[in-house]
Image 1 (spheres, rainbow, N blue to C red):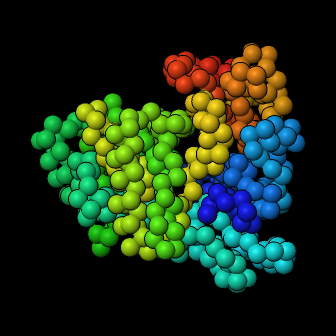
Image 2: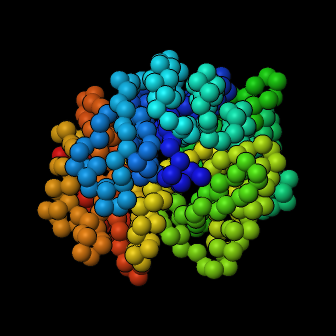
Length: 431
């Protein structure tokens, strides 16, 4: 349903709303970056790759006109863009405070309200105006997103998991660490319940770092706050597969992508994933098993499942669930566009700081000068996939979040494609 362009939709890109799930009294103390919400709101234009001509999208800045024109060649059709004078809170919270905006929209036609992450604010927005909402209720979404519950669900299904333990006290954490060491583990991943894109996941490389980390970890007195400690897997492949669970329990495998992970942080996506036919069959099987389980728990809608393939070829079918749209969800139409043309797509994101204010036209001009901009003749080269989060805000420098895609023939070395993008970004950072 989510990609059916005949259904009119209201797209609410509310990245950052998951901060409301966290109890800051527990876990590792984190610095609250107020500028991060500005960046989240400005990167919301990535929704445009999924929209149809009858849709409405809320953004915090009008996209560059040349950018909008450029992405039409990949299937984008003009939709209704509404600019909200908002930087410091999520779109969902802003609409909750200004319900008149949705009230006016509702009078136009029947819409499905689709949030990036379904939150209590989205439920209240839709309840008050009797708008149809996509997905399950906010409590179930929060439960499924909890990394500790993901491990429990996999164990209940008797599916492979990474060797590890759930811990709710420091004593348990030390015991679990010692047990893993006895089994030959010397590096670890420690996970807190929430946060996406690798935040809340910590790579522990040795005993000294573990001891330091354990001192910082704060547990609850009632032992309700849990974390996990797991073996750190080297030389693994990171695979994400997205499924859509309908109201009647049908489970559809939407896509399988390969993720680019730098230590613990998500950096991008490769499509199609480099999998054997046997591995694809296994993912199709796991999609049905896990999807049926999530349906039984009350979940409806899209869910991205992060998985691993170990160095020995064993598939760990789920290490966490992203019960929401995924970053790669928005780029599926453009990735499929090129896949039909026998092309691979590598999409990467970069946070950079520059002395000079950058914009879409300027970066596009540099790509053309370096002869690496996308060519319609060869159907190869780099595409800039955003405009508003380029120089999104300034303190001592301008901060940009660049989303770049490089399209290339399937038989070409992917490491070369990495280098082409990386070299361009290195140059951009000197401006």
